Length: 80
Image (cartoon, rainbow, N blue to C red; front, side, top):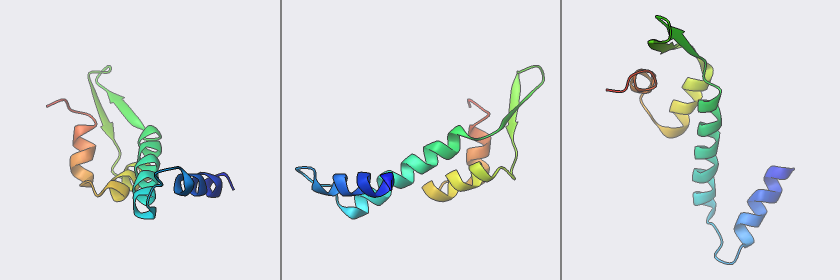
């Protein structure tokens, strides 16, 4: 698989990337991909938004990065 090829190449590049660092890299990439799939609902003619607490991509994102679910849900829709 392509994943196996990438993982192997990361191990053999001149400086090499430790397996623990590879896991962290893949966790961050997976979290970013889940973040891109979040369904953000516009409210009040686009002046506000919300993210469902049931959104599986939000749950996966928070789980992968160890972020508190309610905090992430809040900060995705508020600047302050």
